[in-house]
Amino acid sequence: MHYEIEGTTMQTLDIFLSAGESIFTESGGMAWMRGNVDMETNTRGGLLKGLARSLSGESIFLTTYTCKDSKAMITFTPEAPGSIIPVELGPNESRICQKDAFMVAVDSVTLEIHFRKKLGAGLFGGEGFILQKLTGPGMAWVEIAGEVREYALQAGETMKVDPGHLAMYEPSINYDITRVKGVKNILFGGEGLFLATLTGPGKVWLQSLPLSNLASKLMQYMPVKSS
Image (cartoon, rainbow, N blue to C red; front, side, top):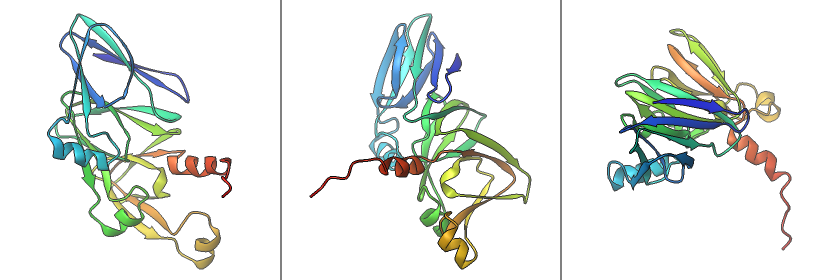
């Protein structure tokens, strides 16, 4: 199996499968394909797991694609302008992702929900209590709106981030929420009341365009219906 990512602001992901290789994605995630490919749609783990995944932005049903010939190609496209990020996971290695980030993964990867344990992080963390967790071994691909910057934090090193810009992080990162100090900063700073505090060791992936920001900007240009 190998893959190619093409494009700039609206990227495409081509995954090339050999005989017997499988990948899975959310229902409706495939854009086009070539070759003899078998499709099987189910809840992948039972109805309860499917319902739990739906809380993190994914569909209840997932579709598995298996190459039935010598080779096949399957193409996936993101839901919004941004970046497709390959994630290579070792055995029991995980990534914590924002809601609806999951795009596609090889059959050996586990997709499940992740709960933020701290009350403040869940209430004011921008994505709520429920996130997505990908666990290896195997390759997975996530879609993140805007451009993506990757940072490696040393033990004890911290970053303060507008919560909406946090796209993905390693489980070793300590995630907490701190209140912005100063009345004028709160009222006129434009950054909201809270910032995410990320403490190493571990890697974090930040996005330049949170979908909530894009939606707010587009709303300014939407026609207002008169009563």
